[in-house]
View 1 (cartoon, one colour):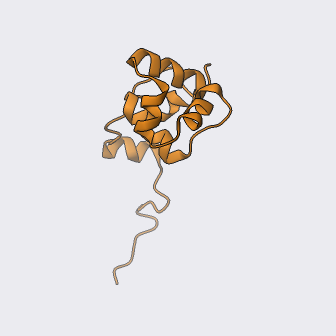
View 2 (spheres, one colour):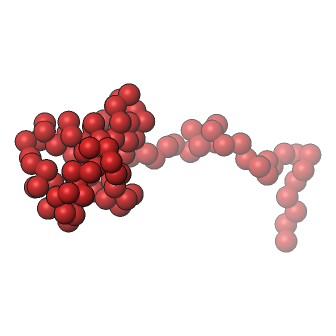
Length: 101
């Protein structure tokens, strides 16, 4: 799976912008941005978020954890999904009623 620096370069070229323009957008010096693309350095978390937002890809894609660039915009799950995913640690059953205060 491609690594961060490979994805970054590919996305920048596909968008048709220069390293200098990208560095200016990220408010870093050009050499710092070049180090990102050469794999010599990785950006701080907040900068990685800005990069992912700029290219409209997920952080997982940018960092090489998935091959799907799709971002999750609505991660809301239904109450039913939540209940099935996380069992209630304090179930109310007839055998263990909750006393009223």
